[in-house]
Length: 408
Image (tube, rainbow, N blue to C red; front, side, top):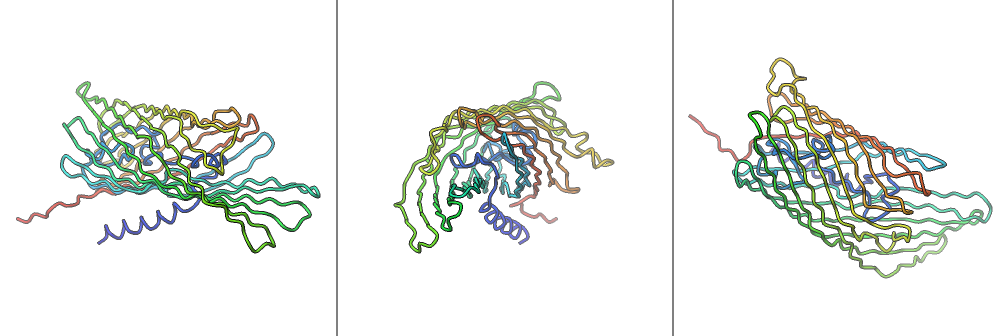
């Protein structure tokens, strides 16, 4: 009963939270918004490095990992984000609190299954151009919404060293943009509201392999591939004018957005339950993400690249004398070319992450804290630069399910 209450409550909280704005970036105007799916906090604290076949932590980016779970694992996480936005002439500050993911992994012998809900992208911005001169035009542009992802995956352990897996992902969401224009000194203003319902299915496959290179050292590898897919968008446009009771509703526009294929490769070396150093490389094709309301001649979409290095360290996994020796300390560095080009400027993301996993005494469960800070964009060519700091918290609960009780 307690398990059912925890899962039901977290699902309810997550569905409500995902409906809120999950970003404050002006760059979320383009495409389907600001990509948020970065994996669990344990992996994000290592800049996204997730190469180890972990038995008590979920890796929701490679479905092959589910086959290595030793216990049923329930994980949920959220972030408080602070974003400082700066142009060549002014600056502003925004804050957001969001849920990041909710997932459950269940071991079944050589098999393992995982399913959950994560945000794929978020839209959240409010840009104003106020002109107080008589007869001048002032405008305000606001966007909200995003795309969520429900996934179900299956992993299989071919040998003690080698896993394979695949998952099915259903993407859905709604993006709404509102443009308000008015003339200083004139009472009436006009509003243009664009609402886009998005939905689509895609697939992901993966494999993981580990082997010993010495008595203590292990080598880990991870490879996953996300197939390109179509995201259908049905958009509606409404134009309202103050004082006019009859809004103008344009005919719905049906658009197919193209989500590109993506390949992610990782390799690492380390000592089990002691330390790990790894790297992750990700490459993604150029998507066709411009909708009819946010297409622009000064914007194009190119290939996405990511380079990351990270790892963890545990002083003494089995220490009874010192709790701090059982804490997992994590860190990582990343560089991302986001594949968005505005005014002939590549929009890149450079960041650093730190984290700690605090074990819950007497269990395999843990509480994880993480901080990520970095910068994205540039003030060149009339654009903006974002300096962000993300404070994250997650809970990973482990238990044995489907085990029959034995009595002597």
